[in-house]
Image (cartoon, rainbow, N blue to C red; front, side, top):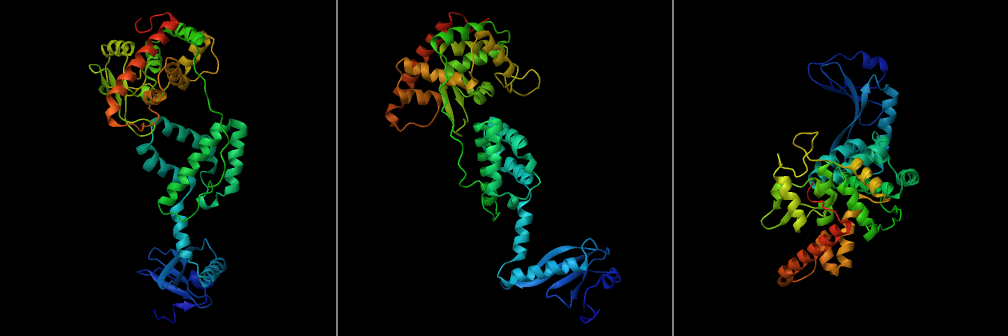
Length: 392
């Protein structure tokens, strides 16, 4: 077909008469610059703009005919020509729109490429829960449609209905997701930037002397040996809940009396000295072990226990304790160590908060002091209950 016959004023009638070609063909609208129609061998027809932008040819998809009428497509083409005249590139904008996808698309990619490979399992579960609860209603929205005022409003709503902690964790998740989108090539901005988190009160809850007595006596009455051993090991090691639940036998060195955690919350390894009562618990459990996990799941083969929520509630009721969380057991060890005379650097090392700025020459003596402080603290805590918790 001649070039003259391929250029004409687009109308519904003219387009309906175009037959399917053996190979794809392009037609040009005589009224609007760069406005084209592609006709495919299948008979499908699509509008597009073909222009040079910044010296390079760009083919920009507009829409399919007859889903999009000629005049509707022509107006879009004229708007794109206007953007090009202003120095903008509609093709790049279109590519960015395709790249950004929806918030749900971004979350899936975020979990696959960032969260699961680099975060602790507990943090991954928290991300999934927070997205499902507080952000899923935005799942179909394009990233560019989520504005700062939207995020501020959602943050305030979550804080009012579900608490400051939930609101702040959701805000942090959303910010991290947008930062990753930018790292991956999205050209938009992070709508979370500059939004202040709610002030959170620093929690200082730990078991007092009197509470420790009630706590351990109630624990001795626990019928589930897994939960009983888990809780005592938490007291004696100060380990985080996620690490304790995922404890593997290969991480335990009974001969050296140490537990080598390959990765903690800070993505660093940690070595925890195991005091005598802790070793006794592990020796007893190892004789009954049937897999790689110290606390193997009785419900899901090959997995470890994920949570002891109902057990914890039951324990607090028996002990007549309120406002005590599993993480407070970890705080309790640090508090009792300080009361026993352990130095702040030793407590920090015991809880694995961060690396101490000490010279290597002190490393061995520091480990010896750490073990001594843990042994003394373990004895004091268990004696407070005046019960035997390491065997039943």
